[in-house]
Length: 108
Image (tube, rainbow, N blue to C red; front, side, top):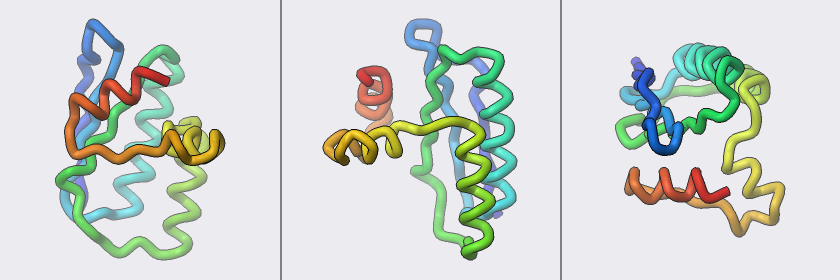
């Protein structure tokens, strides 16, 4: 079972809100999270969202689940990974260090 925690207090210096996903990945949890993030970012479009998947393990996500997740993600807006692909993939980054991930998120 996967769970998530949204840190409701964005960093006052850079408007980054941390979301932590943990447990075994489940489509229902991810779709619910994306719905909440969409509502939050509609209220504050300047907010940056950093999703920490360090503690998220493998789970069963089927083809129909992927479609639901993609649809929910599309409603929430483009993330930096998709922006990187659109810009030629040289901007795609994965980091195991939260400080580096935050810096990368804010630079673009």
